Image 1 (tube, rainbow, N blue to C red):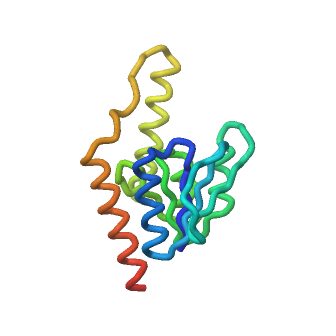
Image 2: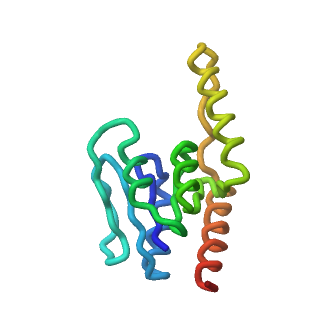
Length: 150
């Protein structure tokens, strides 16, 4: 298993958790972004910088991921493509996207996009709080524990 992180929108606290996990579990974590990232030195932490452009990091993650890999992203279309390839997807808020819930999430995303494009303002998600950090860490631990059992 390798962890790929959609790093352009990944909160710093989540990035820090993932870096600690990489070192502790000796598990490859690859941060994909269209900008340079400040990451701690480790043989288990990698950074890939993609060219600027819409969805370039997402496209690279989908290209690289394999069945059983874990993707960290809140991007619903990216999650759907990764799930189709057999990867697991966990949002920075701790929500596990699955084949059972991703289509509903895509439909809701498209609906909200339609509302925004017709001028209805919705606002973004609330700031990442302590509960979301805990949910992320708990779900990450569960995923990694299952990996160890295999």
